[in-house]
Figure 1: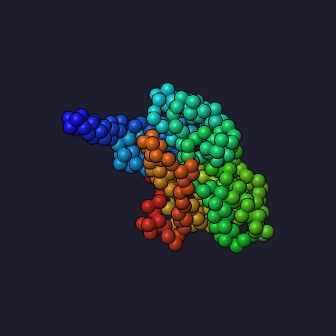
Figure 2 (figure 1 turned 90 degrees about the vertical axis):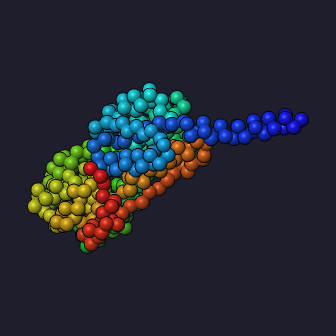
Length: 324
Ligand code: T6T
């Protein structure tokens, strides 16, 4: 009897000992597919993701397209799915066009988490709609970001005059929501007229020429909101080329290192930095938690840091500038 009991105890402790060892031996591969590879925002997101991957012993694969476009992102996604990673983190480049390609990953049993941008309505795991299958959405609050931008621009133009939004293209959740928040806030400022949005396809040169064309049609233009990194850089360059630095105010979404000079010279009044490293970090942590049997929040919101001339030299602020 004693021997049987001892053997049983041994079996129990053996299971207890073996189970965690097996869990630790499993090295998970998590793929991160950015909106595009050559954008400081996603380069910074990758760093945050890598920090979490290193801490958790996860293999992180970063694979993306050279431009922000579903036509080039979908083949990258297909190639990633074919390699069967344990989970996919992705910034979908279109709310609608990425639904079916991502469903393939989900149908293949690969958990999907969207970072920065969302598909469908961005409300996941409700059983409603056909694009609610991603496990989580980790991002800035982009409607709020647009409202912050509008308030900053309203202040810098003395609450009156003509402004417009320099934006990427319709169908991208983030930039659509920033424009929505901007217009919602501007509706509370009767002295401000919001002109028609200019779409630049994420091309800073196009954004610069559009600024000059809008200014040519509206010599009383007083401000522009650049709704993402390339829209803002381009709009700011357009203001400079038009010789309107300081007269046409610029509020920029995103914070590449070049924004420091633009703020210091007065070309850009305010930059709204997102926290992409946090998005990447919590993306990997969430995927890992799910893979190891834990429940995860369906949305995680990350914050903003507002940069202007008064605080840009402060290391607690400048640490949120994006990596190159
Ligand atoms: O603004 C970010 C990102 O949040 C957006 O979805 C796309 O543009 C950026 O990557 C900046 O270029």
